[in-house]
Length: 518
Ligand SMILES: Cc1cc2nc3c(=O)[nH]c(=O)nc-3n(C[C@H](O)[C@H](O)[C@H](O)COP(=O)(O)O)c2cc1C
Ligand code: SF4
Image 1 (cartoon, rainbow, N blue to C red):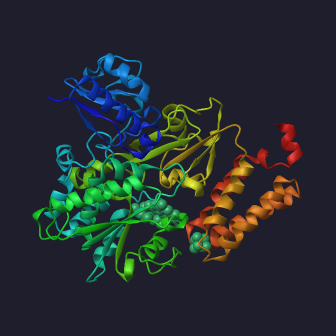
Image 2: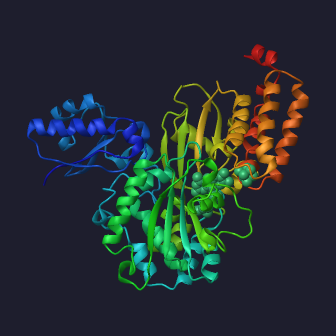
Image 3: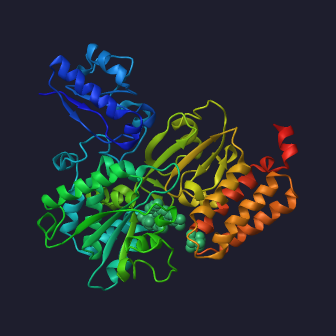
């Protein structure tokens, strides 16, 4: 058998030099006259080991990483095609501690298969969920998804099955499935990773959503900063259409479902579902007032399921293995697994899929390995730019929607940004207000005006101008934004601001004291 070498074409791996490594391997093969097939897989998500090259041996796959182009010659010399030892040798990928500790349900195939091989997808359990779904009544599919306990992974954690039921129960000659792949949160890359590494799982999830609700058309709205994901998804849709996974008779059934890929407009607020729908319709990305809910009047005024990539990509395994299987993972009302994305100043950055329930401390210290700088962790922002900053004192908080809400925080899309003790939390609070001012769609006053006033007042605090009085003003402003904003951009910006003030009060002392303290 011709040896197989896996070199990720995932954009994270490419950013770390995977293309040059692939070229160096090609060159070395040609020069040595060795025949081998280079497979461009996705990433397994251990980014601190990328570019991670794998070879298929008789004993299974063997990984090497992080591989530099200059390592390639010595890899061949030491016999890496047979999995031989080398300074970059990591052993079997699923034994690498960062990967071995995970529970991979949604990301089971990511980094393992050739992303654009439908045969490979099927050989690893793909399409089983859809096969089951086409033989079921729509209400039964909705019931199974509801019973699995799956909640939206885009941020709000709304039960997916309940959203689908509203669309199923709303009569209309046309309904839509919209996949939110805008992935604007800082520290997040789960949507991108799965679209690049296992695109058919998203297509399968969307087809199931269509059959469950009576929608025959789907759109994936992908942020423009993800050109590789756009290209992979476009190719995968074409392949799925050619093989009858999409089309007028999905998997030979009487159900029709087709989909298109659309590229985003480049605004954070276009990830908000109603703003996204406006953008998809070719309008400016401004938030719509609710009601009506998109499930009743969404895209082009028709009933629309709008779900995050990971919500939809988690559906195939639920339809394959059953609601009870999925629900068995997790804690409280947070069921199943969550792909936690660990980033910022951290030693072992990457994607870690696990059942809900690990504590924040376990994730940051044990899995993430602490900071990359080697300094103590000061704060972790959980849930993107609208998420709260958690101090070490709250590291016992379990990763669970309700547990985070009880500590005035949120899980969001499960992105973690780690900061060491050099972080200035006043600057971070100011950044949150500034971000909101820049990204505000402008529709409501607390967000549009409040965020700009917030920047000004925090600047006064930083300059030591009536610090106490101005901090009280910031708190007042945060309450107005929290309760008076139309959407979560203005409504949640108070989370990073207030958590910084609450947990790191020393950073908000007047400048001379702060300098003296340092
Ligand atoms: C300002 C803002 C930005 C958002 N950005 C995203 C995003 O990039 N991706 C996403 O899936 N959801 C985002 N959301 C949440 C969506 O509005 C919506 O809740 C989600 O698409 C629903 O899908 P889910 O139920 O599967 O999570 C954002 C919300 C707000 C307020
Ligand atoms: S909170 Fe901000 S982003 Fe949301 S609708 Fe109001 S102005 Fe627009």
